[in-house]
Image (cartoon, rainbow over the protein chains, first blue to last red):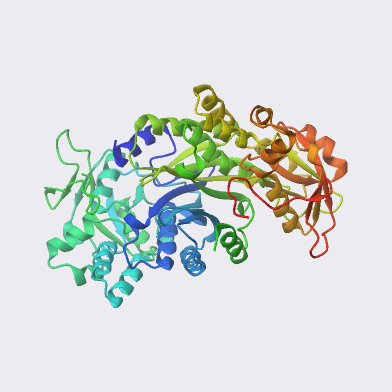
Length: 303
Length: 303
C-alpha cells in the first residue's frame, strides 16, 4: 500500500483525520515529519529547515482558517551540534513570530538521519474550521500568493553556487498563510493548503466537495523566481501547477465575496477558475482551458 | 554535545520548554519521537507500539496535572502494511480512550526505519500546570503505581518465548497517569513523569526545585513482574530505580495532604521519601538510606 492509499484508509477510520488538521473543542492540531534525504536538499541551512518544517504545520492550521497559537518540534539527528540546533530553533521561532504564534520547544532524539517532526496548534474562529468539502458549483476558485517558489528553489539548490543556494534558502522560507486563512474563513466554502501541488490539490478539493473545477491556466499566479529557472510558459505552468510544497491556500469563495475578502488577504487572492457541478462518471473532474488536468504531482511521481 | 546537554541548552533558550510539556493559554502540548531500533524491542506488536508511543506523550500531559484532550501521531516506515497500520492506530485509539482523550489521526511518512512521532494536548485545571520546580523542604516525596515494569518487560522480550513476549507486550502498555495527575494537581508542589527512571527523575526534580531528597529504598513500590525476572533485592531496586520508562508520576506533596490525595489516585500513591533543604555545594543532592543515589539511568548508560 502506498502512502496515499494508506492515508485514505486512515481517514476512513478516524472521523477527525483526512483534512489538513483535526479540530477538537475548537483547538486545531496537525503534525508532519520531514527528512533530510527527501525534504531538505543539499544546501538547506538548519535555519531554513527549522523555519520550513514548523511552517509546514502552521500552514495546515492556516488551511483550516484558524489562528495559529503554538508549535513544537522533535529534532532528531546522528549527533547534536549546538550551533546547528540553535539555528534550527531560531528558524522555528521566527516562522512562529511571523504568524503570531509561539515556538514552545519540543524534544531531541538520536537518529540515523536528520529528521524533524513538527506539530502546530491553533484556535478556530467563531466561523468554525474550514474543511475541504464545502465547495459549491458557482463558487470562484481562488489561490493566495504566487506559485512555483519551491520548484524554483529546488532548481537553484541543484546549481550549488553560493548565490543560488542563498536565494533557494530564501524561497524555501515561506510565510504560512495564517492571516489569509483567517481573512478567508468567514467566506470560504472549502479551503486547503497546497502541499501536493495545485493540480493535485484541485482534485482533492473537488473530490472532497463532490464538485468539478474549471481552471484558467493563464490566471494562475506564477512566482517571479520561476521565470528565472523555466524556459517557456509550458514549463512555468508545470512548475507552478504540478510541483507542490508551495504552502499557499486553495479555496472556493462565493463569487460576490471575492473582491472584499481578497482585499483582506496580505498575500493577495487570485481567482483562477470556477467550481462546477460534479462531472458525470468518467468525465474529468478538473479541466484546465477545456483539457483534463491530470491528478499528478511533480517530484513524487506516484500518480 | 549529547542529547541531555543539548536539551538543557534548549531549555535555557525557550522559556516554555524544559518541563514535561509546554503550557500556552491553558493548553498543554508535548511531543516525542520513538524508533524501532531504540524503543521497540523485537516482539513489540504494532498495537503495543501505538499504545506506548501515544501513551508516552499522554504521560507528559499527566505530569503537568492536566486533563488529556487529544493526540496525533506520525507513523513512518519503509512501507505501509494495512494491518500493521490498523493495529498501531487501534493501540493509539485505546490508550487515548483509557484517559478520556481522543486520537485524531496524524500523518504517514516513508522512512528508513519504523519511527513514530507523537504529540498530545491537554488542558490545565484551575489549579494551573504543575511544574518540576515547586518542591519545598518538608514535603513528602511520593510516586504513583509500581516501578520496574518496563525493565521487567525488556527482560521478557529478550527471552523470546511466545508467553514471555505476550506478557512483555502487556507490561509495555501502561496506563498514562492522567487521572492521578488531576487528583494530585491541587496539592502537588512539583511533579514529573519518570521517563528517565526514579533515580534520575529525583535528581531532576530536586535540581529544578533547588532542594534535596532523602529516599527510603524499601518504600519504593516494585512491580510484581520485577520479582519474576530479578534475583535479589539489590537487583530489584536497580530495575525499579534506574531503568526508567515506567511512566509513573513522581511528586512532592505537603505531608498533611498525602493521605487524602493518595486516596484519590486510581494507581495508588506511595510515600517514598522526604524533600529536604538544598544540600551544600559538593554534598549529594539525593540520598537513599543515607548513601548518595547516583544520577544514573540503566539502559542509556550516558552518565
